[in-house]
Each structure stands twice: as C-alpha cells, then as structure tokens.
Length: 175
Image 1 (spheres, one colour):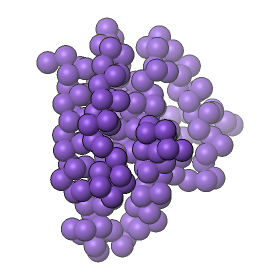
Image 2 (cartoon, helix red, strand yellow):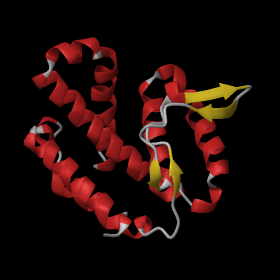
Image 3 (tube, helix red, strand yellow):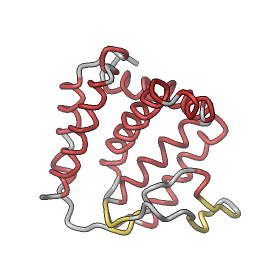
Image 4 (cartoon, one colour):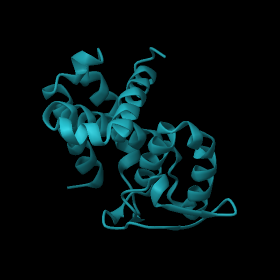
C-alpha cells in the first residue's frame, strides 16, 4: 500500500467515526465534501522520501532556549513518515492556546529549516485539518462515554471543541 493510500484510508476511517458520532450533523458539514477535500491532496502525498517523525509534537514536548528549538522529548509515537505530519499536528496545538498563537510562525520556520528538502508546505494544513477532526472525535467521544475523564481534561477538550469548527468553517468557506 502506498503512503497516499494509507493516509486516505485513515481519513476514511476518521470520517466514518465522525459520522457515527453524528458530528457531521452537529457541525452541519457533509463528510463527502471533507473526503473530497482530503482526496484532493492525494498527489501531494505521493512522497519519494520520508523521515523520522516525532508523532506527538505539541508545545509541552518542545524544548526552546533563546528562541531556538533545542530538542524534543516524549518520542514513543515516533515513526518513519511525512515530516509535514509533525508540523500539522504541532500547529494545531499552537492554535489552541492564545499565549502560543504568536509562536506558530516561529515554530513552522524553525521546523521547516530542519526538513526543507521535503517540500512540506503544501501538506501542512492538510494534516492540521486531520488532527482537528481526530481530536474533535476524541473530545466528543470522551465527553459522551467517559465523563470523568472528560471532566479531568475539560480545559483541553473545550479548546478542541472551539478550534475544530473553525477549521471546518474555513474548509467549507463559511468563515
């Protein structure tokens, strides 16, 4: 299976879970449209090279000193993949917290310097949307099925529930 096929299968599963929880109705979005938007990125996903990726880049896993990224911790989700995936996940997390929004550009430019040969720019937002959908599913599923866990992580889940609809609004040109 090609990487592009693997990612699009992951998108199909994500959108199925989205529909199963009736989140498409909740957010008034047609999952067929979301899939078509994702499928439009297929040519960009036919990569010739991959790299070691972190898999869980978020602000709490990034070590910064003197406005330079000095390291990453918490590598148990690492794999050989598309570096744009790491950047997309990271930018989503930077978008959740007002005090970090100003660092989005800094993070992108620093990470981009490290993986410039992979031509990641066109794929970053694609992955950012995928993480938005996945975390929205996780937040809503947890809220419904594990209210105690949801209560313990309410700040994070509330941020996800606010941020993700904005991604959908942008994709469907309702912003």
